[in-house]
Length: 373
Image (tube, rainbow, N blue to C red; front, side, top):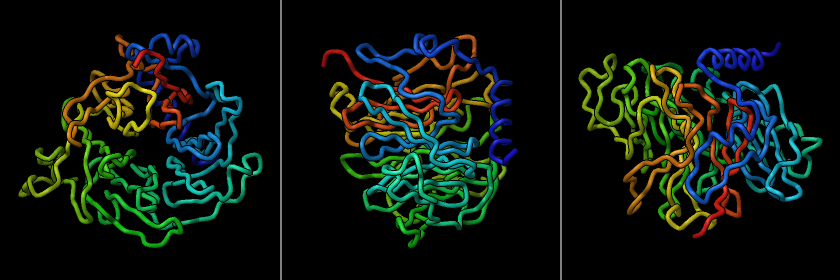
């Protein structure tokens, strides 16, 4: 058994032990999910084990990264009926290829220790080309090693290198946000003090980079808050491991540190909800009140006495700053504490609907607005 399959099986068994439930059918699951009036949620694609990060290619092709499953998928809705009719595994046995990004006919895939490139992939889904190694100097640690990958407005690839621990004082390049050119040159650490981020996006009106950060464990059910951070300039330090959420000194590493010396979060989520993928809504399908607002996949807690998260949250912005948080999609966590699914990433399609990945069930949901505007 390969390393990735062994890890996938281990995580699956852990999930079963944490009260995870398997819905009887897709419709049974959808009936339990709550969405605002006028919205419709459906299953866009299934049979995608460990589906995580999403990227949109040419001709509506959706590329899907995974974690421990080790696969990268291509999903197609060839007849445009809103349901994918073809799933293709374009790569397998990779080292937790969570991150996927697409540009100019090329798919970029971030494994833990490197970035790969698949040239002209959209034309060759059935016979994928051999990948080209773009960059292979990342650490190989599994702990917080899986990577998110996006192209920024500057045309560079952005990703992060998580801390190889729950709480420790790691050397560079750990606990950092980084970027590099698509050819692998120009590697640059742009921010440090970031425990782990697996989701970021650029605000439409300002091009400011916002990213989620998952806080440390074992400080109790309600500490520390998870963070939404805004990056402004190269060299910023966001506090880890010395301070959490801008004001909470770490009991092990915070002695003698002034939390005000670090960049504080612009928004605080509840502790342990595990905010991962996020997207500013740019489309026109949803009511105007959703325009340029932030949608966040809260993957859900694994170490809280009463589980929390397992939802899509809406963080509302005013004058380019977050001011409130509300629930957009709920129901993956039942009232008796069973977990029906775990949302990971969010992708906006050209017509304005959203795709949402679920790594527990290996599904991609589609959220559409069908009501009056």
